[in-house]
Image (tube, rainbow, N blue to C red; front, side):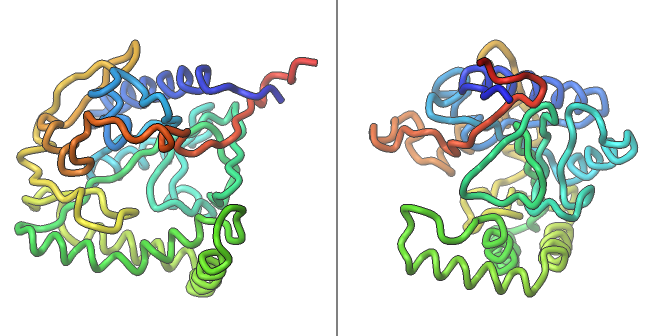
Amino acid sequence: MKKIEIEEMRQRLIAMTQYLDKLCDDNGLTLFMSGGTLLGAVRHKGFIPWDDDIDMYLSRPDYDRLIEIFRQSGNDGRFKLLSHELDNKYLYPFAKLIDTDTLLIEAGGDAGTEMGLFVDIFPIDGLGNSIDEARRQMKKTNKYTTLNLALLVKPWRKNVSFAKNFAIACLRLLAKIYGADRIHRKLYAQARSLSYDKSEYVGEFIDEIGDKRIMLKSEMYDGYVMMDFGDAKFKAPKNWDKWLTQFYGDYMQLPPVEQRVLTHGYQLYDKKEEEDK
């Protein structure tokens, strides 16, 4: 198989996101940039130079509808949606759109199923009508989020202390005993326990510990602006400056040089092409 280098990987990621964005538009769903993708769009007009993935948001109602769209279509095209609802071997608590023509190998991670180049898709859930209620809602998921993270991280990684590796191995064993299906059922039940439509506060919390992503829905997600991302344009929350400031602080300040390294550093291969001899 031919190894795919970073620049080609990024172009493929943009094409995948354009496909996903059009699919969402055609079905009345609103797909937002989030995380490092939104930061990259604002600060770099595209990818952060040391980033190698794309992060997107959907409201919980739109997220659930997207899963049903892929379920009803058979989910067997080149671009496939991975979610625990569609494949109970898949361990992440959020969906990924993958390119099945590629094979992705991540040394320190365990998705539970074969991976390809992916776009992360996070649900934004209802968190209630006060900041205190929102914080309580997030805290209720922490133990399940922590257990699920233990399933995703392989133990005994190089360049990690023995104590940390031992703690991860123990927590991973506990998570396996508890069961991935049970963890996901608890997470999803909690995520859907407060209505997105009826909540004033919302946030992406199903895989996040902490309250940096608690937002007033009316300020963030009731509307969007279009923003350049390389040669493409994607939607951003209308108050993107507040979102970035709340999550990153002084987001226009570059990190120290030693921290400017590829986020994931996985290896990607094209399954359709032979490696050049």
